[in-house]
Image (cartoon, rainbow, N blue to C red; front, side, top):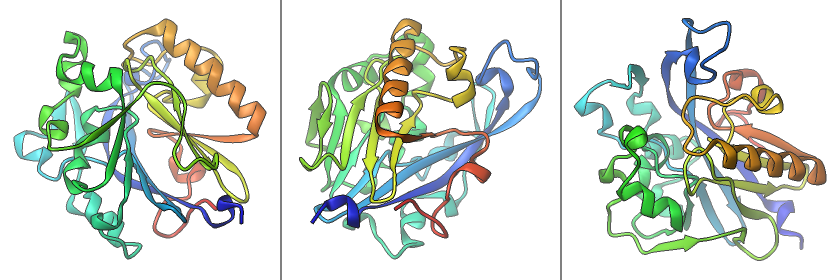
Length: 257
């Protein structure tokens, strides 16, 4: 049996940020306009296990404030990772594998829910997260990842189950160890980009967004993303897509398969 025939992908909307358009493009004509930037994590149900790509936000995150760099955070109990998994009848204990795109607070905060899962991170990301450059310090919170986790550190492409259904692709630039995830389903291939791309249209024009660690590497990552997109006829899915309501089948009512 081809495992892709029984693979299903859920996209969970786990809160978001109210920010200025400059976050997506400092030179956009709409700078000064407020936008809503959604946060997402993803569940892939596979015959070999339940895989989470990113984990959402730490449940007590807003106890210390309601903004990051003037971006107002929208995060309620219904956005908690365990609450969203429950909408499809799953509990955190059902998750067998966790893959991190990177360790920013809005992607790694839910790690505490999954102490028994095999957890994958790029080796450069884990090192950087403990001593980030000053211009990214606000986006890392050691409470998210300084946990008793038996990390599996990656360095390069990684085929999770050996059947090419779930493949980790390094996409550095936003952070040193950023990773994207290729998911081959029966009906399509979905490329989960996380923060390698904020807006597809801006990427096509090679317009950088504001939170970038290395601009040269992010452009190289965009080139590889587009190469794989063409090779595999993949659908590109950024984690903070401004048009998510029309472009993404949001769980629990819809999914990819």
